[in-house]
Length: 256
Image 1 (spheres, rainbow, N blue to C red):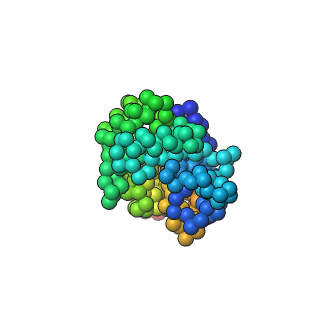
Image 2: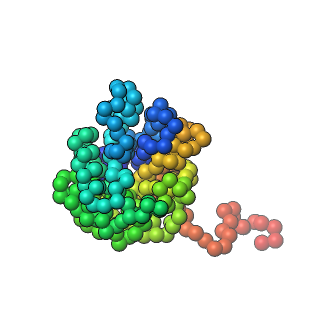
Image 3: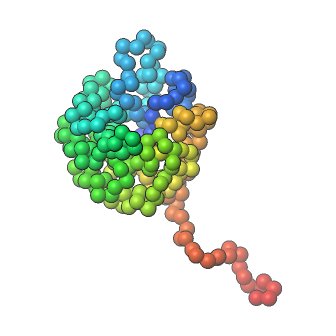
């Protein structure tokens, strides 16, 4: 179970809804992934779309909870306004907070993210901020009351995977009271498994599935990679050694 504030989710995989070839493929990918939390950019939702043709018509409200996000916001004011519009339109207080500081890398602006998060928390939102792999910033987000912290693995949509395992592990140690959900940069199933093996509570992804040659099949692969990574983390990996350690007994070997 993944617990975020008062909410409980069965899957530790969070999926985005952008970049799919069409809504039907998106729908089948969501179902194949086993997710029950789906993030949507509020500016992509057309509430006036003809019935059966809008994004929300392909996201079954009986199966999936919606996590609106503030994608495309570059300052506190726009992020807060977008969050409030999302709450009004979608009737949820969940929000994935994004305040971008650089258009090229889409790297988050931590100073503005922290302040926007503080304001939204005071207004009753369940806030899940996108942030850099920064243990100090992540701890501050936890301290002000964020309900999850979402450090990036590598730039959004890059598919570069986990670029700095050591720093992400330090972030994990820095936040021990709320979930850490690795966000952005996953390219394939092994990346998701590694994130979970590092101690993540969940992984959010979009492009890795939407731009795969077979998105529905990749969605299913991600489902099992998340499960495998979590099981491996909980099992505890063997210590790393710098010399061979034979698994068979040496007694009785000729010449021993």
